[in-house]
Length: 92
Image (spheres, rainbow, N blue to C red):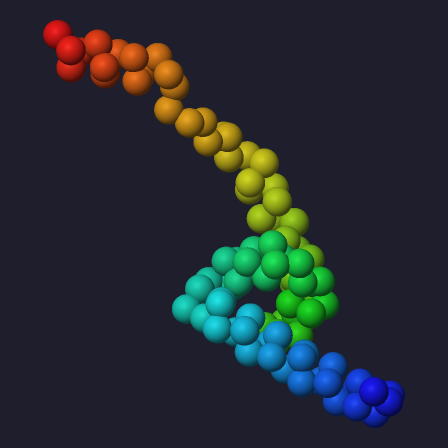
């Protein structure tokens, strides 16, 4: 494969990536869009290009999302004590 074919292939792959990203994030808020695309491994500059925003807006959104997640209490699985109490109550 020569350089020209490689570049054409890369442009097509970039287009497919953008189309897939648009399909995944449609009908979501901007914060959700940024969160999903960040988790998918896209760089802030790539997210900005996809969403038609400035990279700085994406950096700020990512920072606010990280801070909000740190403030959330961790989700704990149901305790075994509650399961035991339920089993005991049902067996009585």
